[in-house]
Length: 100
Length: 430
Picture 1 (cartoon, rainbow over the protein chains, first blue to last red):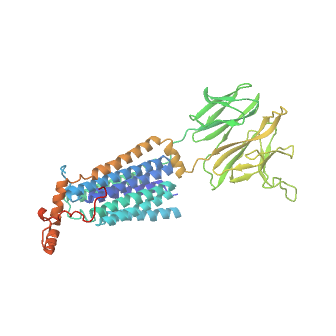
Picture 2: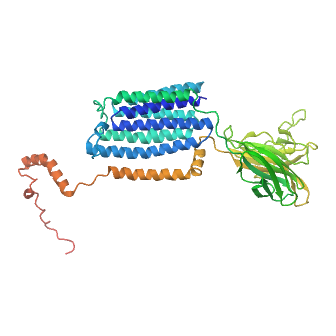
Picture 3: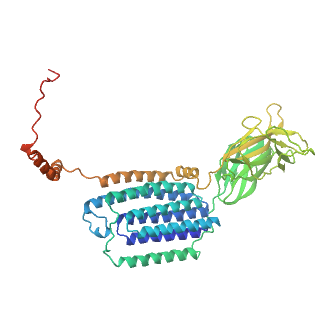
């Protein structure tokens, strides 16, 4: 059995990579995908802890995270499409005004 | 060891794909690398005993969500957006430093044993009461003066009750006969059955562990035998096999013995059997006569179902025919708890303890669906604007047509004249 610490370490590495994507990439869709990667890393840690303690609650949390992520993707991509229509761009550096 | 290597390989692929997602200039490549990462994470879920979540991860994440991403990227033609010079040049080194600092803090915390993984929270002990005491009538059971089960008749059991861990003074009040009891200690993380056996006036208590985990072998059930008959010093259980007879070898020794010599109030270790039909017999020491074939669904046969946990007891019962105590058998069947991480286990928890969050999440999905429609809904261009748009777009085409046919069809006066009334044909109504 692989130690839980190793899974948590892998989850931390993936989370940091997702953070880097959010900070460094300027394509709004890529920023969004990086957020998904961070959610996945958190899910991995949750499942690892669930196995460590033999408690199935962690699995349920992951299930809810996946559901909420689906809702978030629907809204987020709709926002990106709407922004693209008005700005003709989804470069987040250019989206620095509240004006539509 | 194989598992460790699998973890290392799959984890390395996941990290590699995540890095490539960050570095790819083309957003479509990034999306494909992210799908690879999610597939690797689904594989790790399998290693972590979460098969249901692995499938959900593949279908919902790597499937539905990523298809949505790729679709939007292709719809907007956004493969290469944001590739130019960054507006905030200081953000890149700052972001890398901040991320590395975060990685170091978290990594040091994990690697130095900063997270306590060794002391899982313990579950409260659970207890059920089974009445196998002849002549006692329905019994009420108190634990430290708290009523935990009432009206448990002969040959029946109560539901499981959750108790605080600790020492308990159990007292049992039968409908007929005197109150009796004993002290027991219930430890955390235990599931037990408290069995009252004997006969009225001479009732004894025994606590036996109840194991409701999924049997390790597939398509099998777990059977625990219990001797609840104080009239005999021991009882031996035989599996009669399909012929219903005791088989003996050449020396005349019975070969198909299952459990040897259970003393009264003693339970056997749980035994795993494949599902099927069994004929068991209890034999007492002073007679080689089979006392009773365990009664089951079909009288002489006992049907054992898969993924059940059964307590089969040998007890005394007062016959209504001759008013004497006769040996009898009783079976208490429970569904085994579904395996950890299985769809059934998750579904059961989802519809019991997590019903409210489940409903809230479904409501959230509905709101998200409506929100996506509202956000991307575009006001229909007004009719006049649309007409102007069409004129503007079709002008070059109209000029081509004008040069071909000799008149300008875009001018209102040059529009096609109304169709002449149809000749040689009268409206049907006249």
